[in-house]
Image 1 (cartoon, protein in one colour):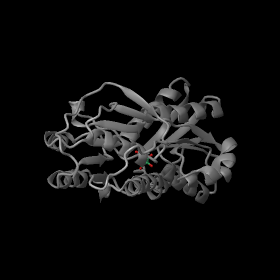
Image 2: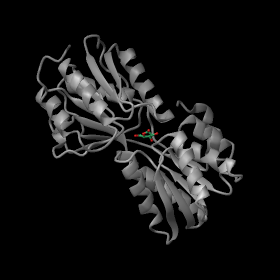
Image 3: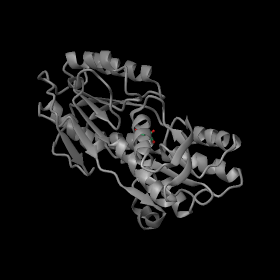
Length: 318
Ligand code: AHR
């Protein structure tokens, strides 16, 4: 353990922008113990994030205690409790939902253990309860997807929506951003909306139900690529052409999404970079050294569609 001083967490109302290629500036971390509470392995994106954090810990010689919560907040709270009891130097948390963290974060705060939030934010009455948040702007992602679809359809589309995990920041914010974008076009409406829990299997199941329930479907908006890929399977099994008969737009930018765009099935994806390991451990190292951190670091994302997919597919890292 290298945490000698109690860290006073300072609330800094500032935002940094990250273009995800941070370099380690600390030479020796072999005494640093960090607990990482991961949500689960529901999507290709999440697996890539886990890999990035694990490999960065290894690269820096950090002793990483990893806990997979199997999508359950109660498991994450238990894991955090165990990390605190073990007096880890810092905690990295990818919170499954936004609310319900206050008591456990207060406990970490009282013990002076910095908590680095990665990829999803939390709702707490006092932002001092976590050290920093490194994440994409999910509202902006939803807006980008909606704007792209509006341009593609000339502002006219009956859309079905596959939402992420209920209560999760990306599900709430990607819905909000998309709705903001299509609100500018009276001819665009979401006709059906249900959770597909960020998984391919559930995305397929819900899309099958949407297709069976009748009504015109011009486009699918999925809150992540895995659900979109499941929906594509359902569309094909229903005898329709995804990408042509029904447009499909999603978020994440995982390699299978690029493959699907090259095949002409997925129409577009908004990248949400999961390679957060370097930035997360930079934050850990700075926090344990008592340095000030920005309250938010926004990861920069961009949109890819079929016109660009082929050119960039080989360079995709996840
Ligand atoms: O929080 C990021 C989201 O969580 C990703 O879009 C999704 O694939 C994951 O499960």
